[in-house]
Length: 257
Length: 257
Image 1 (cartoon, chains in turn brown, cyan):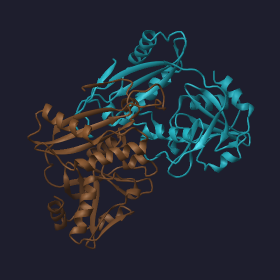
Image 2 (cartoon, chains in turn red, yellow; image 1 turned 90 degrees about the vertical axis):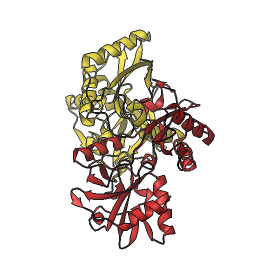
Image 3 (tube, rainbow over the protein chains, first blue to last red; image 1 turned 90 degrees about the horizontal axis):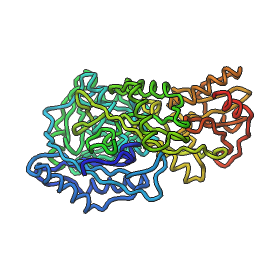
Image 4 (cartoon, rainbow over the protein chains, first blue to last red; image 1 turned 180 degrees about the horizontal axis):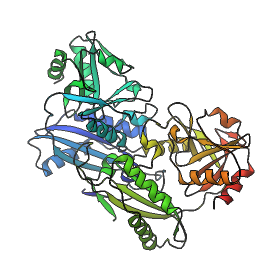
């Protein structure tokens, strides 16, 4: 599929979901977790869900079709609510549309800098915990961060608690413990987030899913971002202030494999 | 245009804006206000803006092309951020895409019932005040209202203040004064909202743009919804409790013309 009709609800209303999967020389990393999350998202949105096999076949076909089966690539699967009439209400039987794209995905070089942005995440919507086609808040948050000269946004939620990046989960280390915002803060249930929490537990590191104000980051012994494409990426600066490096970041990056 | 390529950022990320304009026997109601709002929205999102003449030509062409120039119709204009690469960041020079659709639009029969929904509007994002392609919160809010047997959602913001409907602004009458949530509550800067406020002022009715908890609606002397397609529509029930009728609703509906 190269195009969608203009009555597609994904296009008109952001009604749908997506996943971005790392393909390493043709191997789809954590494919089951991605398919699972998309299917859980369909339940949350009230949409028919795809079969995992269909998702895998689409991902593998687009890797072959784009000649990216031999390199490090990002596969994006998009599941729209399908065509619909005018207005907010879906047709009685939505017929979702599956789209697949692939692009080369190099690992970012070096640590990331963060900038606080004004846009806040909305924990009072299930969208804050899902990868939906209504992703414009994230687009704008990233834009604000880039305009401030940083690589990624530091987003809070409406209550002023730390939420994460525009396209990454956030972790920090304090008192030897590993912290990340609780899902209830309005953060994506990240697959690399879950892998990182599991890896930390395996290493015997105490992990805390927290509701915390941003001031705690000023005292952190280390800060890092996670997502499926970058794995773990250290943060070396927040709003112009340096952040210490911590050996646990590299240790977790190796351990999660 | 009948389709868009699957790399369109409106489709992939909800990156874009739309307007829904009432066409009455071919006449575009409040066209300038709609064009203005879309152009202001582009500034808020950092997108190139269209010329109003181009919007008008597209709206008129779709009315003719669909044979709806002689009836009551809704014209939807969609302005996507255009094609883009992988990820949140826009290309250096976005080339937005203009889409136009038209559909018959009958006036809803009789008053509306509202149901409180769990999803809240996010005043900490400019999206809450714009008609963007990231409209899934509104889709879900409407779904929750319909599931509760009502016609439209009663949405609060994250602070628990009254915001409005899923696709309408909300007004209430109390102590002879007319109230509507302030834009800072995270509500769309509705064109019919502005017309209603102006009509009330012309009638000598005191108007208040308020931050108010939903309990005030229990004591209201009248409640109504507004949007460009329905004009003013009385609310006769909120969460199963009857709402009194008030003569001002009809008076304003006539006066705004």
